[in-house]
Length: 243
Image 1 (tube, rainbow, N blue to C red):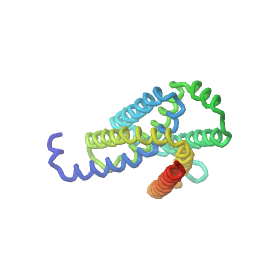
Image 2 (cartoon, helix red, strand yellow):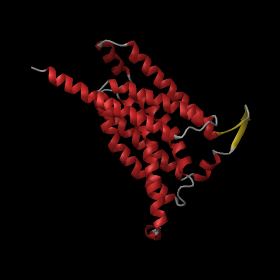
Image 3 (cartoon, helix red, strand yellow):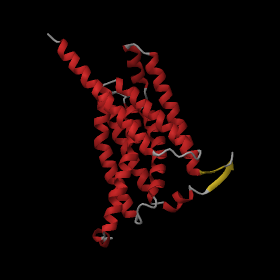
Image 4 (cartoon, one colour):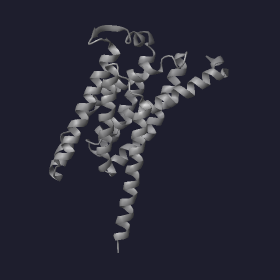
């Protein structure tokens, strides 16, 4: 174990894997930031931390069962000229869940609600139900993340270290993102659009149509930049209107 610290190749694989895990963790952060905002503020913070802790636990546990994870890529059956594995089924199910969740949230946003209805929605949002949803999507993203990581590093210790660092970064960033969405409700629609995009990409990946994640994250980054400029412009207009 100690000799790994003196191997430049190990450090290179660790850095590459950490960056990749952070990028893949963006999906996790967006989902958790959206769903915890359905809870009262004091519960939302607890749900966010618990959700990220579960993400870390799932990733480490899956890394300790690499043989089983590799087996998830083995062919299970064929249909419509495509061979399906357990990984494909998990990605399709997870993507479908994201599509359902994002669509239902967008429907509620477009329908609109009074302050009383909003208060009722928050009060009826079960902490256990939200955590359950986070667990489902954590599992999906964890499987996708670990399967992608296999082959980028030879040592499980390096993979675990990279995952821990990535989740720490996710933990720090998620608080800022969740708070930003809570303070700026218009950004929630943008986050939901991201979830729709991610859901479609997961389903497509499971069906054998791989969509490079770089394209998705580039589109997300550009949209965030435009929304940030829009928010800053709105603040400036509001400031100029003040007497």
